[in-house]
Length: 323
Image 1 (cartoon, rainbow, N blue to C red):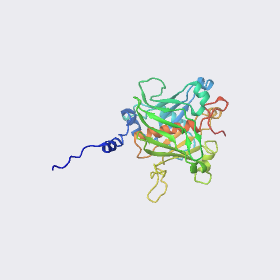
Image 2 (cartoon, rainbow, N blue to C red; image 1 turned 90 degrees about the vertical axis):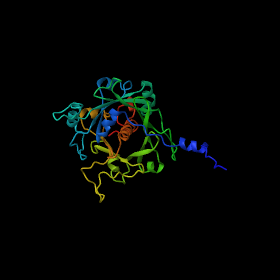
Image 3 (cartoon, rainbow, N blue to C red; image 1 turned 30 degrees about the vertical axis):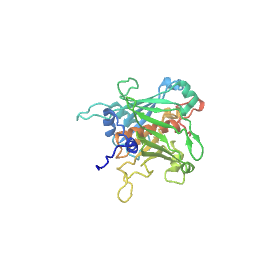
Image 4 (cartoon, rainbow, N blue to C red; image 1 turned 135 degrees about the vertical axis):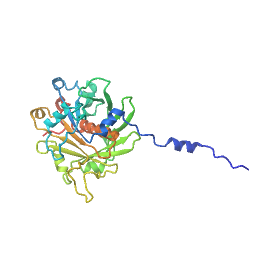
């Protein structure tokens, strides 16, 4: 009797269906940009019309690569270095190499949603190349955040805030979401998970305000004149610190920047009058892919909208912590 042929059956087809899908990749232009980017500065832009009609205008941001020589020990926003990089964005120098290109991001949300939902409103942010906020031809990607107001049940959190990254064709690249944990919350910590298109966690962003831990006390009072930097660490998928920045003996090496997100306080007249002119520096992990960097940037904006924005006196642009 001939051996019975093994026929494909239901479980085999089901196993094939459960195989992980290929991770969604960025388009070539933003992928090339992020591949050559180690650190970026993000600065909120506010014009006169927006200052007068804040409930009708969305937030706008400019994003540039961190200028050379901007060390990790810098305690204030270097306006001159930022402007030099901004003005030279996209220009070719005498050696034939191009200066870092600028990206801009502009929020789109309805005035009713801004007025009623405040920091939990639904919004989209088109990220474009260049110094201008308009035009569909130069859109690189889009950030989308659904309207979700978190409900804390102590043991868990319902409707956790999230922000997804979409390509130009609408394909989702992944998302950043608030990863609530009761034990962390009681210890003054907040975490945000960075997930790829398959839902695999690649990194965590963690804010620590516990005064009993290293850096927690400074974060508790930051960003302010006394504590100009609020530092949020970028951790691996197991919430462990990434190895870059340390030598074999576990000592911190200054020339290797630790992957962090920092909210930078700049003491000037405009910032003191309009406290919502937030400005950040993000230093990416050394082994982060262009897709990871785009998702970490979305995590920065999710933190900006949920932590450092409030609607007191109708001021949607103001910082969430007053000093």
